[in-house]
Length: 160
Image (cartoon, rainbow, N blue to C red; front, top):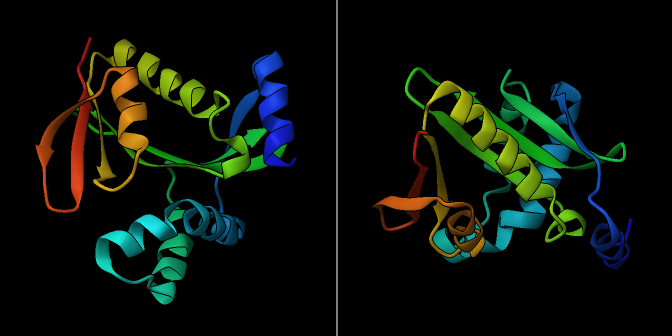
């Protein structure tokens, strides 16, 4: 669905979002969404896009038992990778194709993660590239920067 059409639709009502477990057939999906959403930020941060590395990592990442494909009305909208550790929930990846950004999909996903964290009484942790404006998205949800490095902000949503 073109970006403008999806934005119009999700302004009218929330879009149904669900997850399915990722598998080896999703390597290209992982690559495509990372390339679309992160390529510019990666180049801005490290000066280059390493095609071979991103292809390899996409092939590996889709095999994680914690990785999911985000579906909006059965369309592949992006990827999500969340791990439950003994001390916290770690959001490793949340990437949505541009057609599914700014229409509540990411907010729905993050609220589900925050609900799970509250049930477990654990904080939620993530990192975001300093050049990525997604930091403001996380701050609106209640995340705070707990550590900074040259390339990253490390953020946390406190335990309930």
